[in-house]
Length: 141
Image 1 (cartoon, rainbow, N blue to C red):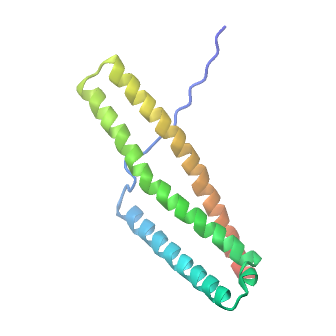
Image 2: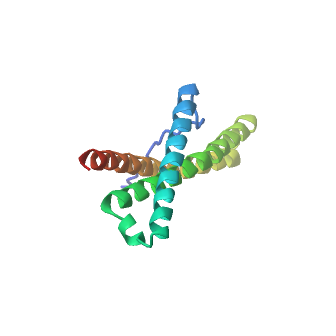
Image 3: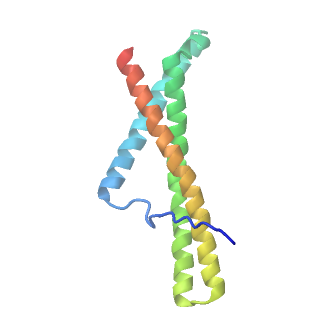
């Protein structure tokens, strides 16, 4: 016999669903800017004092990684807006001309965006774990 599996992945068609989402995302970017500015200032101080190696303590390494992952996730979330728009465009094309070619194009777009969003979800979950580790480290030291 022939066996196959189908995986359904839900993808929201809007990046920012409501005002609360926009507010919290703006707060996230502001916190990311503050952390980046603080780290760069401390790195410059260490470079001026010629103690750059001492800047990279365990705490700062975790902070640098969480800031870099945060910026990466922020960029991917902004880019995902165009991915979502491509789904909406292909859906509109299918709704106006419901034939096999537009259906296949829509299915291909939705499938590829769903796969990319799956990696984005893993990256955001990893960032949450990093931020928790950063909080625990800050509370310990």
